[in-house]
Amino acid sequence: MRNILFRDDKSLLGSNWYILSKKLFIIPFILSFIGVLAIYSLIGTQYSILLIFKHIIFLFISLTVLIFLSLLPKNDLRKILNIMSIFFILLLFIVPIFGYEIKGATRWISFNFFSIQPSELLKGPFVCMFSWFCYLYIKTNNKFYLLLSFLIISMVIILLLLQPDIGTLLVYISIFSLILILYFRNFKLFILLGFIGFFFLLIAYFSFDHVAYRIDNFLNGDNSQVSMSLSAIKSGGIFGVGLGEGQLKYSIPESHNDFIFAILIEEFGVLFGLFVAFLYPVFFILARRSILSPSNLFISNTIFSLCFLMCLQAFVNIGSSIKLIPPTGMTLPFISYGGSSMLSYAIIFGTVINFSKNEESTANNS
Image 1: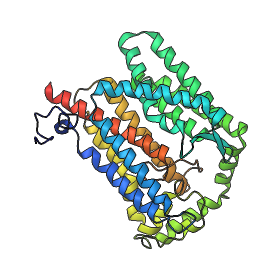
Image 2: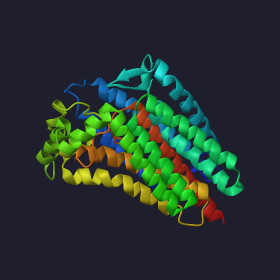
Image 3: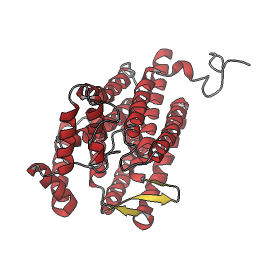
Image 4: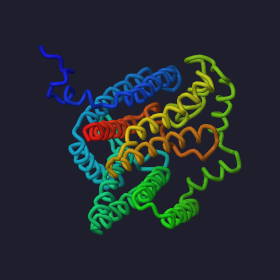
């Protein structure tokens, strides 16, 4: 039987193996292993052993999706991501009708044995679609693509306001702004988007009680969850108290996603926490290095935007744990528990690896 890794193999894996940027697989697999350790340490608190089983199932599905997407031809992947965007936007429309509420927000749709969060799954595909429309506008100067982009963005913003999910909405607005800046490279646009973002924060503060509550508590230092998180980090010290020996997980709510970083530091130490935090920008740097050669504008800007999105969400989660920013309820990519979050970042990692592979291949052939 012929080895599927031979260079003359025409299968999906064999034909792509030698042009994959294999070093980019290292970081998502490291993050996956760290996530399993973190979730395992929660067993025996308010969570049963079922949590680790579900996490491993989510992880297996997500890694399968990641590898599959990384192997696809670039144009096929782009088309699939556009279809995903349309599908998840349609799901966003039905969230207010069929979704269920948790802590004042209706973000999830239940399908008997599992639930999904469309706004989370939409992130990667929508970044690619928006980037593609901007690319088409730059190349053709056809304003239809730009108008269509802003129409879809407006729909997404309205749908997220209806949930309401202000934290996720701010992430979307940040990424939309970044993509516009990358394509149009206009300083006046940068200033304008900054003012729009500032005024949106003001509107959110005065319009949504839970936003005002979180910001006020952050400024006044009254958040008990953050205080417990900081105490756990201090007790962990440089090398931590050991796997399963931390105490924060017994007292803090949402320890399996919102404050998973503090649990990691308490049990493995500050040095390990720094190692985890730096994995995200390291992936960013490795992905950027793969497109240092003359590259397709769409590929370059999409990789940059997806990596920035990943680093932004990691910063928000970590920043919430160490009192840099108010708590937002965002997960730590590929470490926190959550099927939608894990699958969302599998799509992002897989897309970045795929586009890096294609870019390197193009550069090598030129």
